Image 1 (cartoon, rainbow, N blue to C red):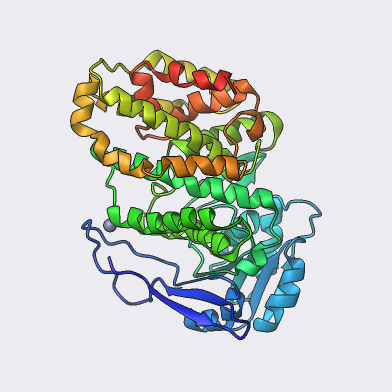
Image 2 (cartoon, rainbow, N blue to C red):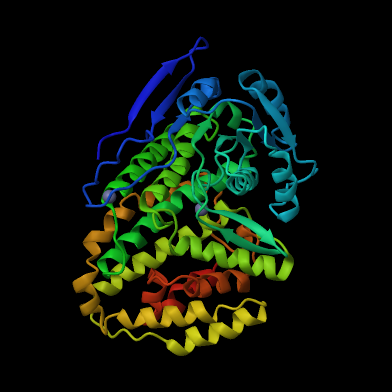
Length: 452
Ligand SMILES: [Zn+2]
Ligand SMILES: [Zn+2]
């Protein structure tokens, strides 16, 4: 795969940003070395200090003209009025909520009403919730949208999915059109809350596990992994680790590297056509925390990326254990009774996962009978490279106070245990957790939880 075209464009204040052409409409996507073609919907990616100045050029390059609707919340309102208004002919839509804007039907209804026939495209000015609301509303009204990211807090900016609360239950909306362009001006991130930046680091570090899981799926003959897509994410992660070793979390270099990792993960999802480059066991652990949190308390225990940081720490430990197991010769037996007992646990929360657990049990019939047979498929040498930077990754937990204990993630010991043990129920994929269950090693792998 060819390196994407990148331009450094100096501006009068000696700040520079990167402008990347990701796709050109009408131009055919060349087949990848993996044999597939990976179409990208997003056309432009502009990152770095001063990137906002590129807005008029990006609009022209994307063929967007006429009246825009700029959507923001109280946190991003000043920015929208001062910095964005002079650059684009836009009506403004401000969510009136004083605190966090809820991503629910009411907010969506308000926004959809504002996208009147005179609005040609929508600009999301914000982070997670604003982006999700605009993504759903713009798709519903059949308008293109672009995002001006205000915090490097999560990787959903350029994905085709969004999450909305329906009667208090967080529901995924899939198959949406991703943003046609993303502009991430690191000067805007300098005032982003530290917690959001830490969350972004957690979501970024999760990619090591997610891609190891994707590769393992291929080794098991269940998924088709693309090394070129991983290479693209890996390049950004390498830059992130380098920037972390050089300066603080507020340097432009660090903020840009973090944001690029998160944005490029979104592009990777567009390329693969699924969430596999972004999400593995570490995300399933986070999803369980959230599902239980919403079911029992009406909210998630922590920011998404901080939950993923917790999941990543534990999943990396689980992989170390799997590598040890692959060096031994012992039987593997899927504990069907245990998976079946989880059905009741979920029902107790008012969540029906019967279908998902049945699918999972059917899939687990593919787990070989012994570790020796598993090793013939899952060669540790093929997975170790994903964890080559393990020490550097784990050192960032201390440096940025990323959560690896239940309390640091807003959980009780029992809730954390529930998340780690029930993460295997959600998706029809064989993850590291399933293999530890089959080896009878999961209880042992959870022992360090008691010491936290
Ligand atoms: Zn490929
Ligand atoms: Zn994520």
